[in-house]
Image (cartoon, rainbow, N blue to C red):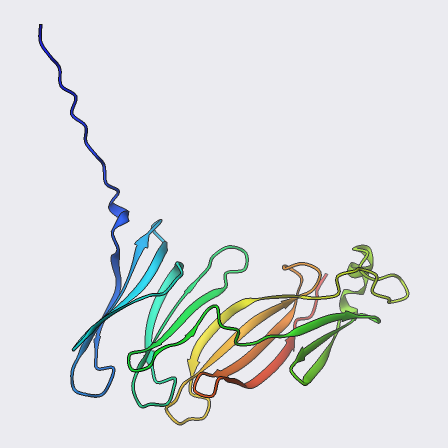
Length: 234
């Protein structure tokens, strides 16, 4: 009687090992020594990459776990903190209906400079009577006229016909950062971040306008802020 042996083959997913997403050879510190900067991650699908991390290989080697995954991750090099050395900006998109931006800025000299969990811009918002919204940042504030949405907001029982706001929740929806670019605001070779955040009304798709800002990483403050309005079209 012949004996049969079972051969067990363990299949190891090809996607479990980090893969190089972007690789750049660049002198970060101006010391004439080239660093090899590698952005790695795990491909969860053909377009989404999880567990992003930076590997900096030079006189010393450093690995930084970025703490997020993203669609379309990119890597750029600018001086954000004013030390005349290049810092590393990694950013990518969350996907989904919001499609917000995740970001991480790292200095090879000073370590972490900024990450997505840090609050760049904290806005206070409030629906008010007479179809208006209050947008406030620290001691500065402005009003947005919502009268172009009057019929919609009455139909949705947010306002009554007398223009009184009647819902318990009076806050607007403030999303994540939708746009984020390096921008030399002072024309001094020290880069700030130019960004845009969507402001929505009764629901996320009810876009009222945008908060457009310039944030200084060196000074850790907003240097410029503008609130724009999007006209509602039936």
